[in-house]
Length: 239
Length: 298
Image (cartoon, rainbow over all chains, first blue to last red; front, side):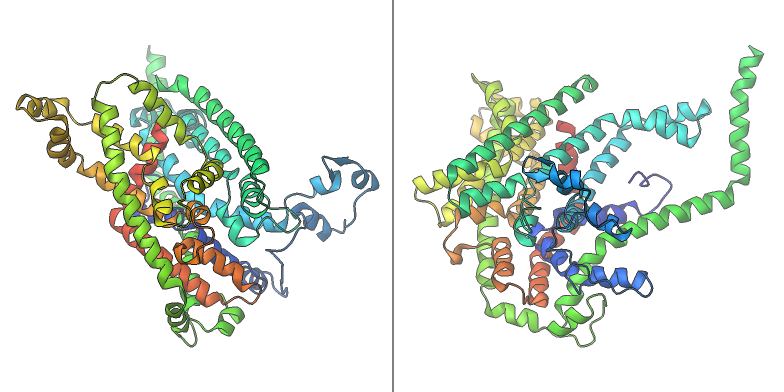
């Protein structure tokens, strides 16, 4: 991301290319990903083409298996040790907790990352351009190497945009809704149920408005807390 | 003293030598930089290119070879079939809602922004704090209250219900207030001395000066309301004739179940992307301003 520096030309073009996914309709983008990730779709064909001899027919979009579980499966660990399967925390066995996000959720994570990267990049870019160039020059004169400059000058100066990106990322992911609506509707086996989708399902499909508002209120409190933490951390910087 | 000077000189000499041997190194750095940039650009553009390419393939071809960018047998079937479905109706709904919401925001946000930026009245700070607070409320949390209020007012499944709740937004007010504050006060004072009323000052003096801000607001709210999904989904739950394009598309996917007509879905996605793309490429600078503004506000 920070590759977007001075010595490269054509910055405008790349900025446009990276930012474009952020402004298009989430629904349109989700439909496109639905197509790419289907069983005989582009992603599977691409993987098959890259791995010689393999014909990958991965079921991306209706797959409740954990990502970690699948990786372990590749090295032969397929079933869980008894103590993990038997201990349960909040209604799920430890094994299920540890097996990682489901494959479907993983696909949705790729999609959401893909769409929001452009926005985040713009914020970083604005932050980078706000760093006065004399600071960088001063450190250069003092003999700092590129890596030192990055670690000791750029990162501290970028604290504010970094935190901003972190918090809007956190706030945003709790609310992922459109993509889930199109791709998985919370399934398979509730593995892609986000608070936002839960609110919608309780309120508008099961028509239990009370439960839906309760979830909404919890979500709201959580987000307010995130926002307040963000403000508190960012404030001293601004003076 | 001399030691200090020497110390200072050493890095400078070092730099000079870097410059001397650097051409090959710098070219390598550049190639690597461009390589990374191009790789990511391809990653971001590829899905759109594939969507476009597959929307003009036949159904079996789109399923058999989704990766090829040039269709073996281009066909406009998907687009022709689209004309026969409700998509035309949804597009019209989207246009109506988007235009009305954008107009509403232009008028109301700029009025509110002006009042908060320039007029002195009791409770001004409190109102502004409230506006900023609303920025932090996630839309999904508002979905249920909105639905219930619209129900009470009898505005579910009406155009009014689709448009009015979106016709003012906190971010727009914030944007306009900041913008108005950047206009020099002297301009208005001159007008006031010449005997203009507050509204005349606003309309004749401020609005023309605020044109760049208004353009930014127009573009952002056009994009926002054209892509809006949650609100039309809950505000028109039972009248299929009032669906906007995003809602229609999302439900179309659901209705088709497993045997999906991907060229049609992709074609519709292309269709929904085109207006925003045109506006984006024409007014890019303003989008970027919008993001930067939201970041600066912190």
